[in-house]
Image (cartoon, rainbow, N blue to C red; front, top):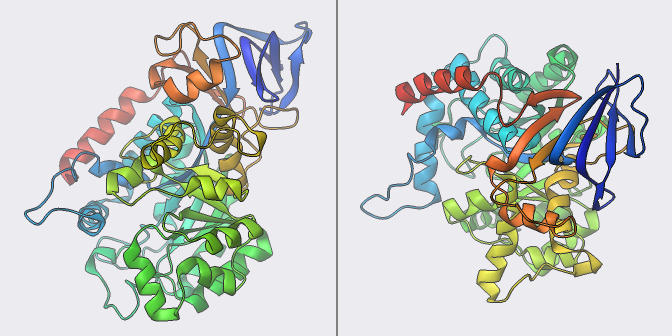
Length: 458
């Protein structure tokens, strides 16, 4: 029997619509959205004092890094930087068993769900055993992460990472021994995962992720891009997060990473550049022409001191954007959305620099990046509420202390700039309720299992 959800307000067509219902069939697909849907023959789900919105899509996540939340917030005698933080991250990655990785991924996915995130792009690069040897199944750990997403109920695009070297003219790094594969091993593994994916659940999909220019040489990058292009799969890559990586790329190829990708035809609408902080005007133009996405991760970028992405220039050039929780220092996609704007306010010393560009309201733009932008980046048929789309959505309590009193006209900016997790009440993925009245049925089990893992590892 179809489910008819009847909230007080529904975010559709760029506005909060009063009296709009959402009719969802047994497959979890939206049949109809609008006012006046007949209730006869349907299971009616009243949602008094709630607003319903499309689920948010987290475009970039490393779930295992949830382990080092708080752990890395101590400077050494000579200060701290991204590269010192990276060594702490490597130590956490080195110790995890497959089952422990499952538990860590589950708590990260649980936190996402409780924040209204219904889909995630998991940029997964821990592939080997703790001694660096290959598992019999090269996708054992990828499947553990997919299994964790299925347990929580969140939709996942597993972005299987290619990691072939420490960097240009650098010896292998012992901290990366669980990441390394050869190009042939990688193609074999991702091909195998593609074949096996249908058996891993209806809400799992696949993408490829050459980790970075420093980790994947150009010839291998072209090979991976060609493999993905034949299948029209998303391609995600870390680019221009740190100045040191740009310097290294220029030393190897005579070009910055973005110029290198552009020159070799490796930018297109299926490509997502993660971070893309340190860019020039011509690089932004190249990204815009290709309609590649920038996945911005402001809460991680501020935590690591990476820098501030030039979002205003990119948005004026019509570059698509998405958001990612990345290192899980904070898991709150609306916080990432607001920080994209706030960072520019601080840098430029003026308010709302992103408002009105191209005639689009600031809050509408930021929420679109957090929903449709992430879905486009990951090749997922979600991020909007319309007939034929999966029923992926969340609701908020209109009486929650953070947003109470907001009118329908001002509700979206109030949500984007003020909503906390406490205001998220229900989360539905493919028509299945995974969070009801702010609670997930497996929360206690997930937290207890994670606590045991964290005590051992950290």
